[in-house]
Image (cartoon, rainbow, N blue to C red; front, side, top):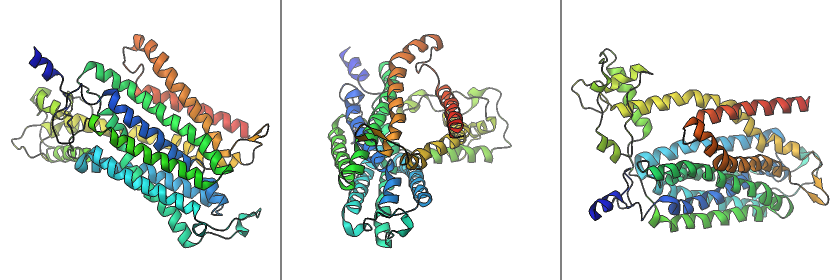
Length: 432
């Protein structure tokens, strides 16, 4: 019995320690490990939104760029922030693993933040102050000044590319999908993960932007830089408690294998019984941290990748689970396209929305609300909604739907898209 209990204590999802040894569930992972991860995310969101929320004002007021040019520079940088994680995820999955990719990227992130703080602090790295009503009459930033500032921004973007896709998955790795209690905790973890994001965002949109507008940009950028350094140290301190996944082939490579194998066997007939298709056994899938997925009739052409023809070449034969994972990724493409329009709306929050806020009467008594703090209303609503959803909505609706999440992710996204439509319609009517 003691031996069986010892075996049961080991995780069954393929996670290991940094040396590659199997880990005990009671010693590593769970909420204890996640506490170190969540602390990092709070400070990282403070750093990122402390920059992006007020960046358009720094470009116009300090670097003397016009509204159109500054808004374009902000959206270009934010777009890069969201593209680089594709590269970071590839490096983690195919080469270094999530932990080491995150560690190296966080050092790049801190370097970018430090350089950015210096660029707003040293007088020679920014144009002289200008109080002209027309920005065109002010002295423009030199090539060196622009290179230093934007070099720091894009260094930061590279660092974000390695941290953003891996920190949340490191948190998810701390829960064993093959253990019922941990699987339930994992679903709750992502809700509280979002809460930590919005908490850090709210602090940035209120305290940090106020400091930037009323105290100085040096302190306004220095504080999140210091917070980021501390959060990286806290993350590293949690290393003995983490579970890790061994790097495997990139998911893009696995998808390519399925598509190529199906194309090479396009004339091969599919068997009438899906059980005749190639599949790994249950234990091998479990070692890779995967659940077996049965063959489905959707995108049926890809099933030919799993037809046995005598060759075991991975570019000629794929397991059914691998085929189904590829189908799932391909089915995400319409969802990705559907988010393009809402993303363009959200992008305006940190550019035109902030610039419009500078024209408003923002006084409450003797206190003047910073323009970038107007975005805080979005964050406050999200903080409230996350708590209400996780603590009240999910337990009630779960009884009706029998879904551990309450409602499906697609239903949540659909409701969000409808709300976006209503919000923009009201905004349009208000403007007209």
